[in-house]
Image 1 (cartoon, rainbow, N blue to C red):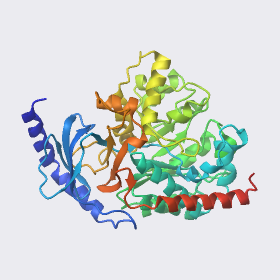
Image 2 (cartoon, helix red, strand yellow):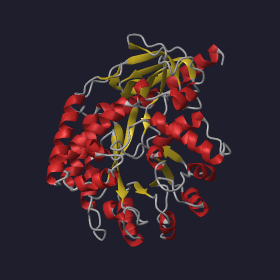
Image 3 (tube, rainbow, N blue to C red):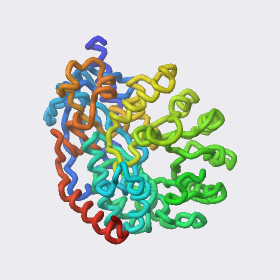
Image 4 (cartoon, rainbow, N blue to C red):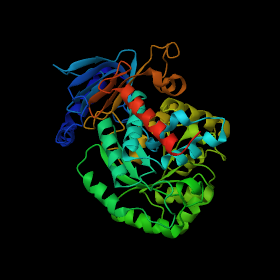
Length: 470
């Protein structure tokens, strides 16, 4: 693309969005920073391979990104930013931060207890047995630990899928952990483990949390529902369509989005027959579905979150290619870092391979499509695409720098190919959320990770003693 066109495009993008940037930065600045978070400052990333995820701007093989007061001011081949701190972006890819759409952060501290080859110590038995003993402080420690891993892996937004909220104090602890962690996201308030299936969720407390989050620029609220297909009902709860109607009506009256696991058979039909599908619904795990399900999802604007690493080990085929063909919007999620790790690069690569394996390439999903799903697609799923998900001037500065100087990344050709096919979390150099540099030069800037880890181990020791776990 000619140089003069890029400069004109940069100028237009930087000026027409200034009022939006000022509005957003002012809203964020009005909120006090959580203790321990680094201050926002003005900086410009120079000379990076910039992937904007904004079709109007396009990409820049060598470009600049200017950030002020937590907002993106301008993006282009060359951006004037007198007085701004310069972050050298050479030999790096600059892209929007990854947006995770489904992650059980409360399970993170239980990783030391997991055993891959002992069926009694895999994810479900471990999290259920020990999750019953969680105190609010345990919930806080687990979420903080999960968010720290997210930052180090380039995730800037996450949906905290909290399906072990044991009471109001636990809800407050998870929200406090999200605020202290500094990431953007949604708190999906769910029932506690072992809650009777005929007992409705505590919507009085959900309404209270909604009031608490009303003016929070970083965290929104939703609910995560118990299963309606009977899948894993013994540990996570299973409700019928009547209870789902009761709870979802209450959630919708509060204007809250809903998310639900659906890896069993028949769940989508139950929801469709009950008239519960809608654009405020996100389903998780695209397994064991059929053409009638895909058509119903597309008709009602339901979104699907794919957790490819964990799903690849579950019964049934991962059916995101069919859903994409049917017009269902798809995003990417981590699920948990108890049995696996946070690696959006591996998630994208797995989806690429699964599609090729299952369809022989008949369903065209490009590497750019996959990066879009992991960034802007996730933001759209969580209703945050006007704030994050692309490097658009006026949006909040949630972005990542990925190094390309490793032996596996040298000779960079297409940046999207490199991110999907070669990159891994060790290549994440810098993670910036809302203009705050939380991770730089592969190090946390204002976080004592060793203390988080020690606190998590202390909680695990207490849980195993209470549960008489051997």
